Image (cartoon, rainbow, N blue to C red):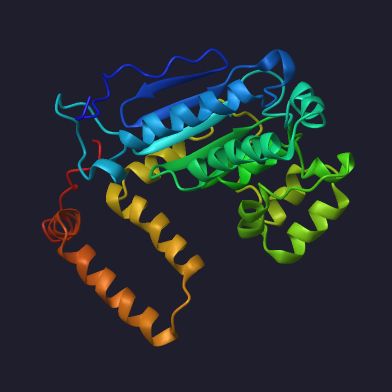
Length: 285
């Protein structure tokens, strides 16, 4: 198990599924009878699959293949089965929250926080395919993804305010995605916005009449990019988000980082392949 091979048994799940196609993982929410609403079990299952894929990603392992020669993961595609992507928190979970102690509600919130942070910081390039509605926690999932594709009739909302609560746990991710003014407006309004508006404010990245195969162009683009460069770009962004030093210190840090990447095995392969007019070893033919 220490090798984290792709053939290792995946966590057992019943409310979501994981399919592997080469270097691409497809994680699908399958609780479609309740519009993929997030209950404790589904949240826990998604976390387990995010952990499993993280441990088998190129970004985490630092190499393209496992010990059997199978591809480590470079892309994660998240989707929801049925009519809607995700209707937010399960109504029974919200009802139970009213009877729970502050400590129990804190535990539930920590579980949600782990879900969103695991997706936000996942080493793979993450793609979302969104149909129907994405409310509350569903909008939080969208905000944690690197590239989001929506149908034109999709509707998204930070709907917590309609229940007299706040989008606090998902807040940092939505805030980073759309900025201060839009986050404030969406959280106060708490109403649904359409696909065009979601695209305009940067909450989503692409509109598609059909979600079937809609990610293929993005997948091809990412697979032609250095796998470690993709993962390191995400870490680079997190570093910029959290930087508390001076501008001069940041400039020096970027110089060190650039030098390290140029000297890495992937950096050397990328530069050599460019000069030799050949495909790098990570690009699928």
